[in-house]
Amino acid sequence: MTTHHHPGDAGQAFPIYLTVVAGLLFLAFAYLAVGQAATNRNEAQTAADAAALAAAQETRDQLAGEWVENVGDPAAWGDIFDGLVNGLDDSCWRADQLAAQNDASIDDCAMNGPLQYSVEVTTDEPVGDSIVPGTEDKYAHASAIAVVEPSCTFQLPEEDAEDAEFPTLTCKDQVWDLDPEDLAELPSPQDLFEVHLAD
Image 1 (cartoon, one colour):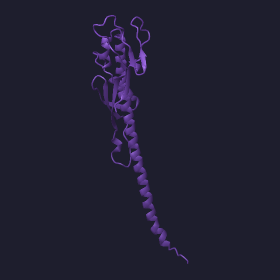
Image 2 (image 1 turned 30 degrees about the vertical axis):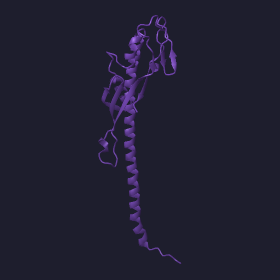
Image 3 (image 1 turned 90 degrees about the horizontal axis):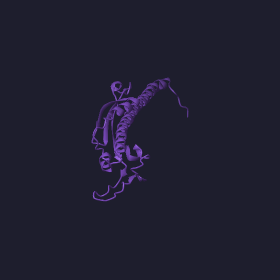
Image 4 (image 1 turned 135 degrees about the vertical axis):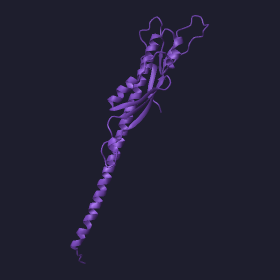
């Protein structure tokens, strides 16, 4: 059986072809716009996480310094491990630094209690031009909370105990039998405190 093609068939198919191609291009650009937005959000979250962790780590280092200064006074250890130390410097300057290194700016940085920092950031660059109107002026925002968690336990001697021994400090799986007459080797800030993002 012979099939006859009329010249008009090609002409009718061409607009359909253009419509399909246009539709596919639109979908491709739409996926690209979604991808750009997702990338911007991820960058903002990375900046927020890094900033919160940096502020918490700075506070951890200060608390560790306080512990070293008071290592000979075990009665002061509890407050230090709980973060109850007067005169600590605000650590949000470290959050500013890490946000800037990740192309973002701090909107808010606060110490929520003695051992927790919350940070909010905005990316320095907008999502950019796309087929979605207004994205050229849209900036990604993100927030994060970082926690300083004491890693050590110890037992103070009874107040009326005679010849009380210096308390043993247990940090995770490591035991420190500290000698008040020889304190050359002490736990590091990383031994004393763990810093992590809040769940």
